[in-house]
Length: 173
Ligand SMILES: [Zn+2]
Ligand SMILES: [Zn+2]
Image 1 (cartoon, helix red, strand yellow):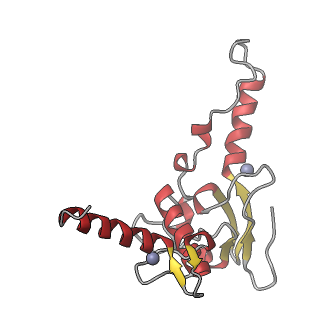
Image 2 (spheres, helix red, strand yellow; image 1 turned 135 degrees about the horizontal axis):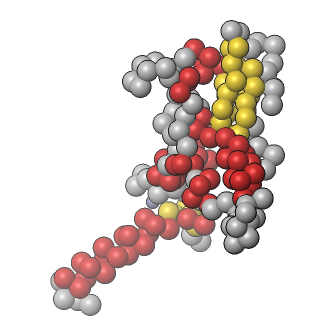
Image 3 (spheres, helix red, strand yellow; image 1 turned 45 degrees about the vertical axis):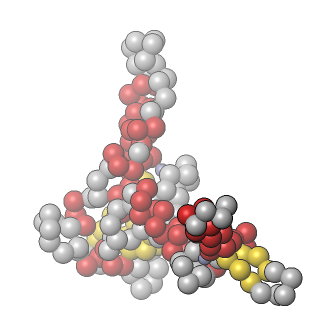
């Protein structure tokens, strides 16, 4: 699929038409002497190869076998070799002109569940702010008392727990 604009930049949508997420690991970029010219989804390619193999399989048990999820897992793919010609060498200049709407760029590490979670939290922190203790101030984490003061619920419950522990230690409770 070609989507290059006049400046020679290529924008890759968040997902392909089948709904596969597109990241450097799961996308093949076609390049010309002028830079990136198009993209294709490698999961679609793998799916098509699978379907072609199993659709007319001679063994009726195997015929039409659906593709297992782990065959399409993002960890089952590697970035295209041309993006970084030598293992620890620099990225090819064209990679800077490709923009993934999924938010995972060539300059980033490949996504993992941990990196996805870290990004999600960073987005929430930016959207809601944090208290002095670092709790994200989502609407459900903040309450206003009768005097109009705002309190952080996690801070208040930590305070209450410390207080209970102190009282228990002093033998009052
Ligand atoms: Zn796809
Ligand atoms: Zn707090």
